[in-house]
Picture 1 (cartoon, rainbow, N blue to C red):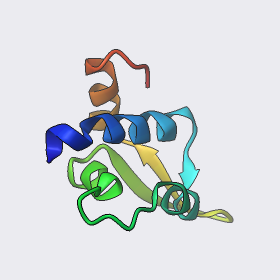
Picture 2 (picture 1 turned 120 degrees about the horizontal axis):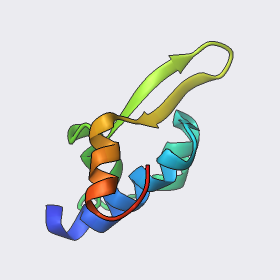
Picture 3 (picture 1 turned 60 degrees about the horizontal axis):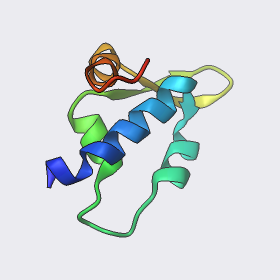
Length: 78
């Protein structure tokens, strides 16, 4: 299934790379009821994104260096 979800994981990481997002925004935007589409979980498990507490904002999601490399490998900028 990884090959099937890779384009969506790439889209998620690229979307987060544009600007750090609130965790609640990420989950709301990328929520799915399909157990086979685990885009958020795949990105976290692969180390492409991380959750970080930010004072006064809550929990934010940002890409990691691994996520930036994933984008570069696929011709997208981080």
